[in-house]
Length: 403
Image 1 (cartoon, rainbow, N blue to C red):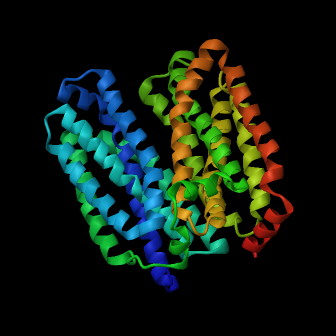
Image 2 (cartoon, rainbow, N blue to C red):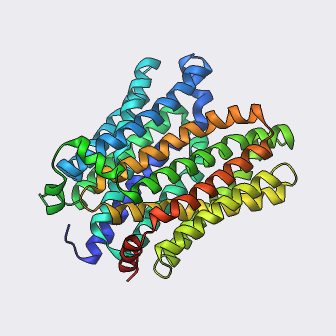
């Protein structure tokens, strides 16, 4: 894609707001789960299933859509995804059958799954060097804002207009995005990178797993998001059972983590042009590991200390995702869509595994030991993976990016 700077910036914000919408459609759903249960007269297990299938479909589609983007181009995937999201949102709003609702929710997940993937891939095509890192920071910032405001919007709209109101609004936003992207997003045309992406799809993904940088980032991403969601799921239990805080007030204590994550993305945008990726990679992983260990030590001692450690963890979680995304796009120029898709798939897998495995760990040992082991494990893994990550050849490549 060869574009003027103003055109590139317009495309950037269009795809980033599209990715923001995808995150919004996922997170706006949580506050209306009791309304869904009451409206469709189904069990809590079935309502929770509607959450799980959305995550599972989103994760699987990352791999499928990533390869399609590399082989066929991004525009056709983008337009089809938004159309599917709009149609499925309307279906969710009008159906009175829970089975159909579940099917429409799965279609909505498949459609919206394309949006963050295309945003990251497009950034890799439009920008290079430090501008790419800054654009990734913008992208990640909008993704981190959505989980902070979506539950508030979901509760307000759901209370005023029911679950139907939420899905009608999602459908309306989808239509606006369809028109906007149809006008601004460039048409697909055969490029050298797309031609080099052609070939056997298994060989296509094999090149990702045999790449040292790819292996390191995918491994650390899984572990980090595993820990992140283990903390997220444990917080309500800690606050209500240990500190005896009301559920409504407990929700406010997520703010240090949410706001510091947003602050972390701003920090990444400002410092990534001044600090080499090698240094930033080491520093952010060290901060993440230390904050997890500090959380393990402080979470049952003091709310203030716990909030401070969560804020520190949030800053690292604001820096690391755009950093990893930038490094992935730098490494895989010819199969960028597949690489970002696999990166997202691994992240979602970690998100799904974290709450389940950590729940088992917490039945086996005290929470302080459980989270200490997770923090020490991430630190040890980061240290062990540094040599293959930054061999002399890799350091040369990173210096060229920094220039």
